[in-house]
Image (cartoon, rainbow, N blue to C red; front, side, top):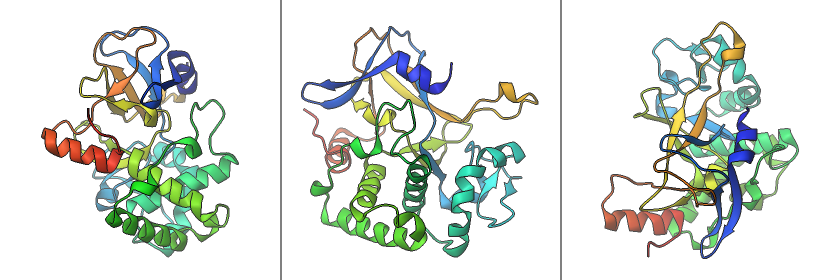
Length: 275
């Protein structure tokens, strides 16, 4: 069963009263079951540790193989390098021309290049589109608006060809989506954040102080000699408690923040208020 098939069979997108669009279970799950798994629509390592992080599976290492053209993207082995060829091949020249670009801009460039490459905002089988993800640009603080303008200007300089395919409003929308929905990627230890990625289906998970799911980033496995045993890096949404069919799927963020700080961050970043 591939990732997309599992998504279609195990979860449903629905309109939730008072919450907007969300995800519900299409079957029952037991604790630790994988509710669904999803490969990143786009993902980048943090620039501060890029030389020690594989750009494909996001494992950390000390003997990584660099891209021989730009020396700015690094990989565990030649298998990971081949897996990332399509994505990195489209950004290699941009990185050479403008090496000092922030992670948000680089991720936005990958998102828009994939949209252009696929000719649509999604690939067949996806349950949600980038253009339908709700953003709250009209509620951004002045500081965040200034950051968005800076990122937009940097994007146009970093990726001028991709920018020609989209109007400014859509590019701004993508930047807002990244700000509101991007998730941290962790190395093989599961504890060290090494990058950020956009997962379209997981973006619909609502947050709860009593969630029934939790997120795990699985780095995949490309070490087997037989490629049939290779598995891609992916986000896994796992059941925390028993889940019944038609139960809403929820997650919990900001685990280590006190209540008042968590409430403030939710209202400013996720744009909802805890009742």
